[in-house]
Image (cartoon, rainbow, N blue to C red; front, side):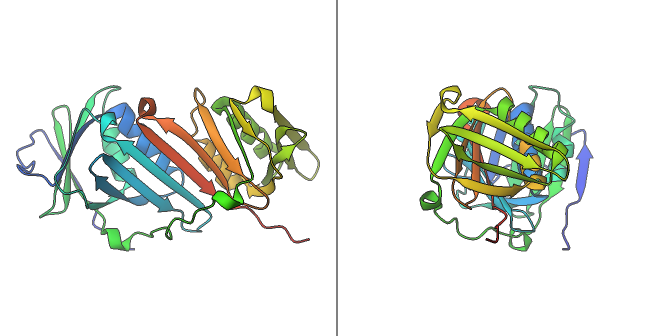
Length: 269
């Protein structure tokens, strides 16, 4: 894919658009967490500007995993979407490099020039100009299908517990089984010689809705998702019988949400 993603840096923001189609001020921590969550599955995405914040739906090239993200206007120190129908094609690694220069808690200023299709980013005394990717050249996920009828069980558990279970499974196998048995959520993985099993009884979950559920998932994808899951906050899971697993958690002190969906490995009876 050919894309124009040149980055320029200067010590002045003289080129910042005077009437941007979109502008915002956000802490480097919030923006960094947002970019990190998206980057575990995709290298580029389309950011949509809306009245009440930004939204992203992106799918990995193999169409196995999808990430959806919403960040409310309240998560920003300032937010102004003059055009609420913008589609900004973002090369995530380029923007992450710029945001990574900022100190923790430092404000990052964003301004989009619709005429030049440049995103102006200011971090302290440094001003960067990023050429955006053509949004039509970025793989878009299919229209989001309502999976509610496939989800027969759900559980809310500590992010740290979910992370440990995935890490343990990754040590012994390439696939992980997730399901419900005896009023508990189980995680199982079986390798050639070793196996692991982790259970989360309903009483140890902040919320638990039992139902018939068992699915097998690639640990390549769940391990990627695991890198974004916060260990200090709960993660909300929905799953079913040979159904996708949905893992959702809050970011930006509750002003944003990240949702991952990973398709199962179908088994042959």
